[in-house]
Image (cartoon, rainbow, N blue to C red):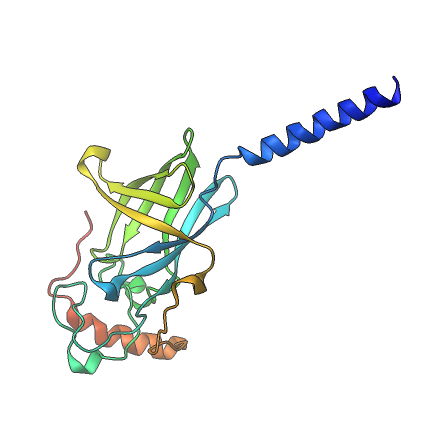
Length: 205
């Protein structure tokens, strides 16, 4: 093999590697902005690998603590005594879990690739009603938006949200003046206070 042939072969290999990198499918892994009609419930979701599947958690809430005039998950305006308290999973059907803060909560479990840009086989927990749903997601061609759909039984009967990819959690520029890491004792106290929001006792389906 002469010198020119060797260079040509190496060039071909390099071109193939570059081409392969350029057409690689976007990943579901990363930070996603979940914007809601009520800005008090907007959040950043982090999707990360867990073995052969992918899970998701609430990395940040725009408002991790109740603010004045906010409407709670029960549909009631937050009473003055709860303003400044950490938001906890008060509607969870398992009583012992109602004290856990929403920020940091694992929402999605078990996403698996199911074709180009599609992810299925997961469950998603909704702290706004305390229920867990089947879940699938579809990634846009450019990888910048993720349509997440929760459903029971048939996907056609579910509800979708569109999340936007973030380069980093800081990209949203949330001031979050009401942040502050709560110690376990503080979280327990906040959860006990928050329990007054529940109009009815959650029931297992």
